[in-house]
Length: 205
Image (cartoon, rainbow, N blue to C red; front, top):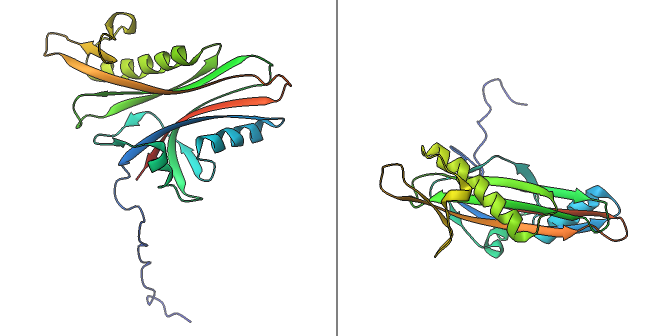
């Protein structure tokens, strides 16, 4: 029996999150699943993506300053079963045989590691890998450019002569936005079962 006021404050467990929750790293992954049940199709897509064993929480679109992009293999090692895991997720489903579906995540960031970048989610129908990836990258780059005070036209400012980057100059020294994307496409199952595609950017701490 405890006396009033005798309780000790709970101790902080090793590895507990304290202070600002700013991810140190992110990895990108994707997958496709097929099943007669829509939910199971989604689960199978997450399995292919290597993240069905964690509790995913969708967040919005900021890539933190100094966040490191790591490989999928390295990132998965940092996800113990049951962990609450923050991610940016794009998903599309269909039951129509042969219908093309896509999901993609775009990333844009500047040359300055002290500045944050943007992540975009895109999902749709009828787009192959390159089209879906380019759309997600254009979207992410446009969002980032507007925060920097640039009015970016993806059709005019895209530069692919050497590396894929957006060039911006509004009377200031040239700035660049580098972009990348992860994409998953698939055709609807010929037997009319649910087909699900997912693309994810997964944060790790």
